[in-house]
Amino acid sequence: MDNLSDKAQQNMSQLVVFFATGVAVLSAALFFLVSIISGSTLLGLIVAALTLSWIAYLAITSEKRALRSLENQQMHSDQYPRLVNLVEAICLTTGIPVPEIRVLSTEARNMAAVGRSSAKSTLVVTTGLLDSATRIELEAIVANRISQIATGQTALATAALSTFGLQIRIGALWVRPFALLPVSVKQRFGLELDPSDDFLNDSAGVALTRYPPGMVEALAMMENRNELSTASSITDSLWVLSTNANTDRPTVEARMTALREL
Image (cartoon, rainbow, N blue to C red; front, side, top):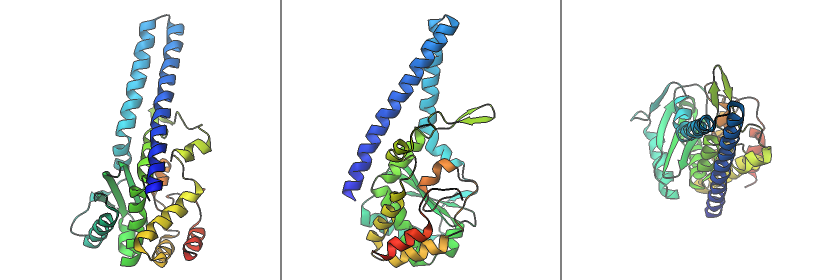
């Protein structure tokens, strides 16, 4: 996991630099454009400064807004001791702090990890998953997400969504300023999953449980019941399985086949 963590950290550093440069270029372009059109340098500076401040605010608050967008959620309570015990045990194994646990009331079966740091992250678990999974299946899924947090993949994906994945509302429209980035760039910085990432996360998870059949059973239990209407497509990479039908991520069968070969 250390090599994966180092790679994720390097990618995150590059992401921050790339994003800061992009925002600076955008602000400068607006400054010159407004200055030329209006004939006022002051107005150009004001527009550029407001744009820079607004994008910075959106980037800083995007994680909280993404979590708030999931309806019918609650903090974990004594109602889910099995989940809490599994999370604490696996975190002890990986050496990371126990993440905040939020339970999403829905029949869908899925789990997500969110957070720009392994020291402060959040697990979002659906009640459909908690009601349907056996202890072995739930342990496998928890290990899958915790391993993603431990390797820095969750932090990278969350940072990507907070920067190049930003959605800006203009009237009734939602605009993604960086939507036209090449797919290779999006995958490098975690904005979109590389097809191999799901396989790597599955392998990292079963390395913790040492029981690949548990994850195979978990995927079979979740298959075709993983879609979430309240989840934004921009957060899809944070979930164990895609939250929508239109996805380029590997099929459940492909992931199960890979796990059986471990």
